[in-house]
Image (cartoon, rainbow, N blue to C red; front, side, top):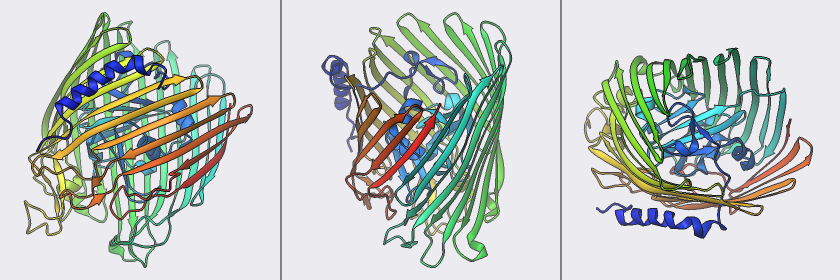
Length: 618
């Protein structure tokens, strides 16, 4: 079967991107990205020097969006697809470049989060309040972060205190009895910087399922989320600082489990990190960090004691990173240890521990118009043994505004505890997935117009998939299993453009992809071949407003490609008005066209919904 994304189409896209700057100079644009990106190389880089494909959602972007959830904010980003089993508060996953949610890593201020049984972050429990910015790095980053970075890495940065004391607060209401309140305090006093935030979000919601789901219940499924975060950083001396940061979130959410019971989940995230950053000399910087991330999930699906469960994951980590300047180049050396501890009251066979000891090195080179990087890492696991990964990237500046780039790298994903041990589903012999990626791109940014086009081809061997009929251990897995297939391919082209025209900012992105099970030739479940976004923002004086269109092609809900999830287009509106100094009113209307669509079969999504609020900020 021929791939959807052909070489001819890809070359055409890259040539088109090279030809577009002049034609679009007075047509499309978005604000220039911030000058520093951290996640791609685990250290600060000028945005113009970042060889990886990335998106940076700045504090201004978050404010202009008027969004009040992380998952909704990410759904509008290039290269991102979202799957959700109902409305806000229900389980959700984020897919990057067609990679499953388990094939991506999520960090909060450098702290890795997620469940070792599910293999992904609890997106619904993450609060948007007090987030400063978000970096999305596309493509494999196992040489930087180890297991699971096949599709990409998302890092969330909370606000850090600077300057004089600053207070902010927000209160909002919306459809489905949504209520949001949060407040924050930040600043710096002498050598101590501080930032603290807290908030509560709640909604009555709507039924998570639709008729046809075996768990259907027409009642509303709401949620309550309480959260707090903060950090303290003390400047010990010039070039030396120590600090502590934390994030706490408690989410109680209803879901459907038949007609007779009000089923609920209770989920808690607790992150804490201690760190020390030291400039040993003009050329040598040391970064030491101790982390602990707890993901606790309790479920109550019926009155029976057997249907009450608690599964907890605690990840502890130690890392020591050394960045050594070699002229204009940078050598990075890293040692790291991560321990995953799972305790399950309802399914004791899941309880266990695995540890991973890692060493890594990378070198970033700058020579005039040439950029290059090479990296290697070895992860030695107590469960699956030693895995080595490597990557190389190169870039060439044709002009100050136009750059070509290419890269190749390997990656892997560790099986989750569920995929290994869950009764009737896991198979202990399941192997880690292995990825091999190659990509090439062109990037244009003259300060007023930004354009990019990237082609990627990510081949994954021993891909772990879920089948309703288990083909490898039928007798012991009558209701399906997770198992390794021969291989899968995640390939595609991602194009983005943006520009400013008078008081208007215009932006657009389009992703063509072909996420496929190469053994069967079928598309991987819940991935669309095409998805796109376009937006127009207007800002003049005290008023700002925007229109956004999010579109996706059809998907299949199952590996056999029998159950179709139809394509959809969502029209969203937002507006903000500063009615007094430090005071503003905002409004957002999502799904203005009241489109009925599904992100997962027989799970409901919201129709048209409204949200409005008032913000105060110094």
